[in-house]
Image (cartoon, rainbow, N blue to C red; front, side, top):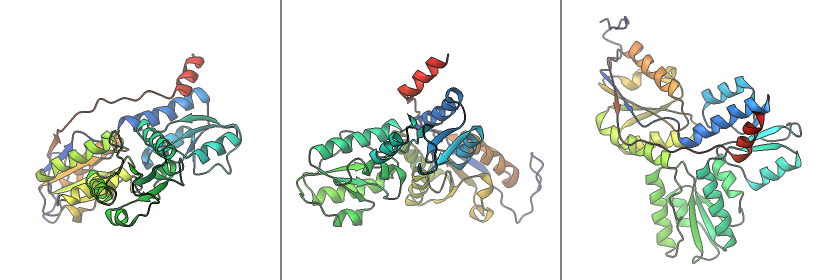
Amino acid sequence: MKTESGSIFTERQVKIERLVLTKLRGFCAGVVRAIDIVEKALEVCGRPVYVRHEIIHNRYVVDELRAKGAIFVEDFADVPEGVWMIYSAHGVSPQVREEARAKKFKVIDATCPLVTKVHLEAIQLAKEGYTIILIGHGDHVETIGTMGEAPEHIRVVGDAEAAETVEVPDPTKVAYLTQTTLSLDDTAEIVQALKRRFPKLAVPKKDDICYATQNRQNAVKAIVPHIDVLLVLGAPNSSNSVRLKEVAQAKGSRSYLIERATDIRPEWLTSIKTLGLTASASCPEILVQEVVDYCKRNFGVAQVEEFETVEEDVKFSLPYELEKLIRDSR
């Protein structure tokens, strides 16, 4: 069999009729803002510019920024004094900010505004004497940063089982907050467990889980009945990427997390007609198109469609300190 693209297939090779993409996919407003911050800082501050942690969890994006002059570091031990330092979109703890002051860094804060909201909630609840149940993954950089705001008041809970056993000094004075990139369904189960144990549980005024995380998870739920297998473009250390795969699996769909098109394994796709594709909030559109082209070339895909759910129009402004630098450079 020969396709329009000229690729030759044998009967034993994978052949897919349709590739369906979630129209809502890829970069969220916080990620767009974070990347813009690094790129504009390189323009007005010169090279190099240091970044605390990966600006977002995507290897392709990090490598692109590194090639432009960004230096990514996990700690400040070997960083010279007085350099430009950008905090990643995931946020940092007060301890990190104090270390930065001690080394006289010129700081630009790229923390996502939705993460900052959770930090401010933690500070206020701690002042009011609450024990804070932080629903999240204890080893994730966002959770580490939030916990640093009030470590003596915060207990990290990662699943419903932990919610059933977490200990607090005063069961009548408990509140919960949430890592912004979690699964809506898993978080709901944990919250239900906490409410059973602590009837006076204080809840956030507004849901902590990021709007983009919610929208992309809902898009996955919507597309699953129309496909045979779902590919999720994202990084294995990206919480929102992993959650998308898990959401699809929870809905009964086979789902695989890939970083690039070449990660696709043909054995995943044998005997299927329709392949689904989505991308996490930290994945650039160029990698989506790479997968589309790869599937056309290698699996004979002739029909590519977009599955529409909701549209997003959220935008975040640049940090004041960077806007001032840009104005002063003109």
